Length: 447
Image (cartoon, rainbow, N blue to C red; front, side, top):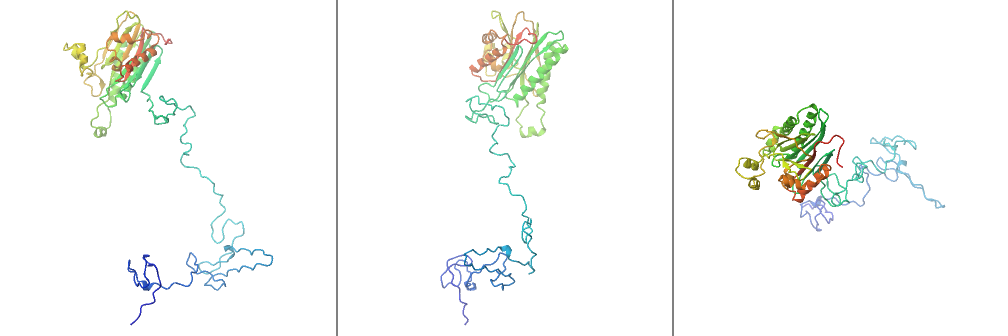
C-alpha cells in the first residue's frame, strides 16, 4: 500500500490560516489538502520585482551581469568605494547589452528616458478656490455695517450680526424720504414680518410756473399674494404719472384719476404668471393693494383713493376744525352710508376693515374716487394707511398728535406720527406722508 508523502510541519493552514495540529492531513476549517504543501526551502533568496533570478556573485548567474567585487580596505583604513546600481551594465529583455549611459548632466536618466531637467517643484501651489484664510474679509474697503442691536458686531451677507446674531432690518422695514417741504415715513410695525406699505412723493411745476406737491401712499392687502410688490408697483406708477401729467397742463383732479388707473394697470400686470405657476400654487390669488394720494397747489387740494387709506386736513391754527377728506371702501363705511349702523357700532364690528375696493386683477370693478378742496387757511395734509389712523381715527384725534410745526418740519412730524402708532401697539405696517398747504415754491424745505 502506498504511503502519503511526508507532510510539511505547518502551524497554520496556508489557505485560511486556521491553526493546525501536527498530524492533520486536511484543514479542519476549509478542507485544504495539506499533503500538497511543498517542503519549505532551506533559504529565502531575494528575487527581483520582475521575477528574474538575482545575479550570482561570480557572474555565473542565469544571464546576469557580473557584479563588481568590493576592494579590500588597505592599511590606511580608507573606506572602499561604494558601488552604485548605475555602475552595473545591464541587458534588455532580449539579453542584448543596453546602450551606454548618457554623460553626466544629460537631461535623461540612465536606461529610462525619463527627463530630470524639469524646474524644481514649488513648495506651495496656487489655490483654485479663494483662500479660506481671506474669504471672510469684506469685499469692499469701506467700513463694515454695524449691528443695530449691539452696535459692535459686523453684519454678514445674510443680514445677521456676527456678534449677537440679531437679524438686521430689511431695506423696506423702515423708509424715510424728504423732498423739499414734503416728507414720508414707512415702518414695518411691531407685529408684521415685513412691510407691505409703500409711498411715492415728489414736486412738480404747473404750466403757469406755480409749484405742485404730490404724495401717494399704498397699503398691500395681506390676504393677497405678494402684497408688498403690489404696493410698490402702484406707488411708483401713480407718482410717476402725476409728476408727468401736471407740467403738461392736465387738471389736477383728472391727473389724479389717471394716476390711479395707471397704478391699477401696474398691479394687474403682476398677476401675469406662467400657466404652470397656478398649477403648483393653486391657492394663490392676484396681488392687491389700496391707494390714496394728494396733490397740493397754491390754491387747490386734490385727493384720490381706492380702499381704506385716508387723507386728513389739519390747519395750522388749531382753533379751526380738522377734517377727514376721504371715505373708506370698507364694510363699516357701507353700513354707515346705508344707515344700518352708526360709525361707532360699525367700526366696533369685526368686519369693519373688510375692504370693498382695491387695486388688483381680481377687483370687482375699478372706481377711482377723487375730490378737490380749496382751503382758506394754511395747514398740513396727512396721507396715511390704516396702520396710523387705527390709533387716531377721528379727525380731532389726528389733529392732536400732529406736531404744531408740521408745516415747517414735515419729516420730524412724520416720524412723530409713526412713533405714535408704534407706541399704541404697532399691529400693522405704518406709513404717513406730510404735505404743507399751500404748496411751497421750489427750493424751500424743512427748517
